[in-house]
Image 1 (spheres, rainbow, N blue to C red):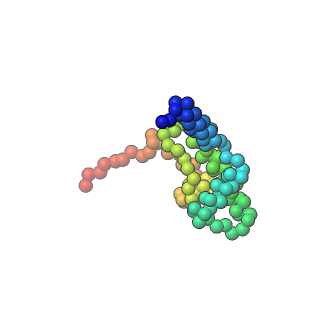
Image 2: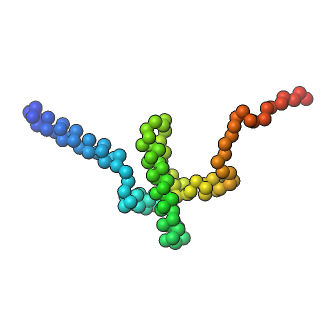
Image 3: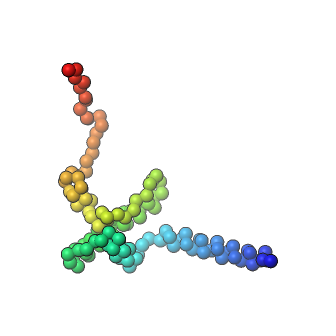
Length: 121
């Protein structure tokens, strides 16, 4: 039969491990772990660059975007979370130019949209 003391010790150890895990899971990524994450991301999304210069430049963009994602997710007041995807090595400008036909900072004012005129044929 398991003694109360051994059960208490086991629960204490489990509780301590859980607290350690929770504390370390929120730690800001350090340079080496960011680079390791980047290498795994490159494999996941089959990313290959022309040379080391481009690879380094893309790493800087990836790192900047990763920090943005981390800061956004740590705010905690959003109903959703951001994550990395196959666009994480692109700047905002590159993404907009590539996927929106070059549109930048689109701000639509709903009150200024033209009114629809119904025509009877």
